[in-house]
Length: 478
Ligand code: ADP
Ligand code: MG
Image (cartoon, rainbow, N blue to C red; front, side, top):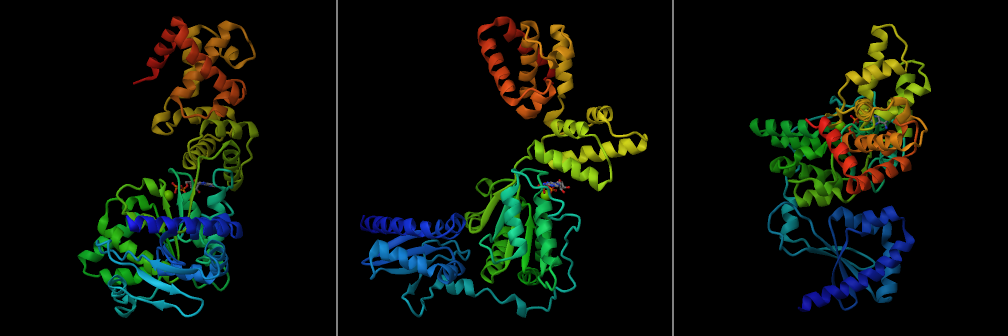
């Protein structure tokens, strides 16, 4: 009971502190450095806060001492004192061990080491074990991925900016680790290679950069165990200045690999080295990744990549065409951008087929070729219903002309089939509202929303429409 009371007091005081802190530093720094802090106890005028690592504490001390003092003055007055409690989770399961406290008077820091920290310090220094030099090791970076050929859009702005900042000043920004997540084919791998390449390109840079997929990391780890060379493995990774680990979701459920990565991660992070990771899902959805590792991921910055919007897709297509020295009508570019809106990899795939088709048949890339190429490509698995097939089935059913569906007529016998076709397009394809509108004579997305709502309402009130829509849907379901 008493402890709860005490910690409540600590919470209140810390809340007051945060108010002041927030006013003085950027949102990003606030999130990175102050949100992870937990108010632990208040003893008299001494506030004890919990921080996740020695590094964290040092960083606060080096960078935020003034603002912390201000905050304490405000919440506790001049006599207010701050004490850090560092919770180093060094991997042993007993979480109830006492934490180490670092007295924080204005001068001199005392460290009271506990058994727990002793343990974490007992990991042998891997550098003594074997001379593994990094100089002759490849960084495994793909030179084709750069910031220059990464198209920026709303979908990737934060992730790109953070990556760029990290590339310019690895381990200096608070984006450490930097975690980029997003669905397949959205540019995660591209971005992290761009970071590595930029760091290596810098004149006079002698940074040891290493790109590794989580799959490769795992298999190296398994080999190391088999060959009894785990220390070499660890020592190799601990020499890296910038570690890029791609697709960390692959570590899910692989406890031992995670454990090892955890040690490497801590070592690198505490030695001020940069870590960059990607994942196909946000950290909180990484099932089977241990909490202590997840909480490490939260130290830096997590930025997501979204599906590119129309403008970005157009820019990507144009860049690709430009790269291939091809001059293609804007109409075709726009058509492609509207038809493929799932991810960039798919967009690139279609472009490659299209370019191949054009050169094989000595044709220019025009709208006809674009259409026929697209019809031959089954894009993502759910997307095998094409908008053209929907339009053709609907016009057939209602006995109207395609031109009418795409035209301006407001006659009811045309409007309903048109709305039904849009409804089906929304249901059966992954096209955005904007793209659906584009296929129906360039209507805007609000018209598509209206059409979908109307059909929904009609299905409730008009048996004929309900029956027709259900029958039409049935024709597409396998
Ligand atoms: P992920 O790792 O997220 O699955 P990739 O990085 O492999 O995706 O990207 C798939 C393809 O799309 C790559 O060829 C990449 O160059 C390209 N790509 C992705 N996003 C962009 C972008 N914003 N600008 C240019 N190319 C991109
Ligand atoms: Mg990838």
